Image 1 (tube, rainbow, N blue to C red):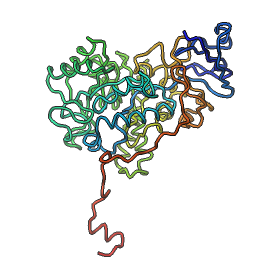
Image 2 (image 1 turned 180 degrees about the vertical axis):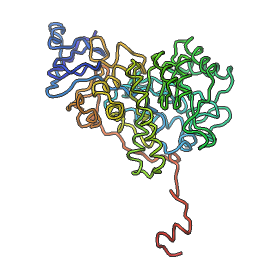
Image 3 (image 1 turned 90 degrees about the vertical axis):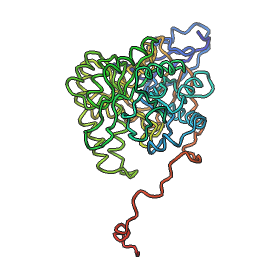
Image 4 (image 1 turned 30 degrees about the vertical axis):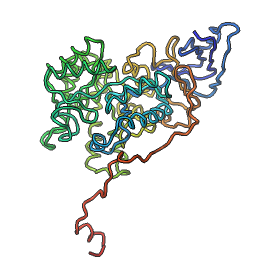
Length: 450
């Protein structure tokens, strides 16, 4: 244990368990919490060097966890941009800056389910090795997908790798790819269990593109090495089969029917609904020119799924908060808090329950249950000192100016050094010369002379 201590005094502690806030102190040493409560200072050895932080009038809560973040993507506007306009080295450098934006938003940990190249794996190791400042991470590699699945349709090749996706079809290909990813150092294996049909309009929403036996093969292969499996599931069949196959976590789990809900509840599979992307498009899409009908579709995914997700939660299924940050609709640092707000406003959680989803429950995505996400002795010292009342209004957590201190691993995070807000990299963004087709009718409707 370190010879120096930090004592956070006079704050109202939100411990992350869902319990009511209580007045007390928090004693830290090294990377860990030593003691919590009104007598916490008594655990400090006589003569020890103590750094005092006055949290009077503030809340002291665990660092939050984003359980669905894509740190290597850097805000693409389309799959075209993401698949064909990213370079490995440059993506890694950009991700290093973007990770700091996540940290300064009060999210001291995140799970990156899949990445372009091996950027997320390398970034995780760089942060852990002290090369740069950033949240603690767990990471997948390329998502396992077949060329029918996903949300990219014909942009996916019949074989090989494109963007964040590795195309697999046969049992041998599945096993081989999982072995390669484990060798590369992944924390999770991700499967794109559902995807958009090739002919839109023939089926509502996404379809399951994997068989139950294939999903079981993934789990058996990964679990042999102690590696958990997570799935992208946005229809009832994919959610049901992923739960039955032994998946350790499911992203989205939308449009569940009774059979899928039963499978999730019976297996107590943690769910990460990740509604922030949909909510941003539905509520603010007009600001970026999104089609109104598309906004209605994404709002419907929330409204048509909240009842089953709430039923799962009431039955004891852990719900984790994830923002899907990394796209043009969910830029890093801006929207990570919003999933908590959606949990309160749409799922009917209390603010303290939503905070629990973003802290203690989020530790599942980091594979650190019992040592991350709570203000308790022996837990990792990831702590926020916050000037506000998130126990009554979680939306306040989106106000970066309210963070008096962000602590990760017992060390104060530098939030004063400016970070670049945007950059202009050759070939990085897809340039568009129009949002509409320049027909004569359009010109005439605007009163312009031909």
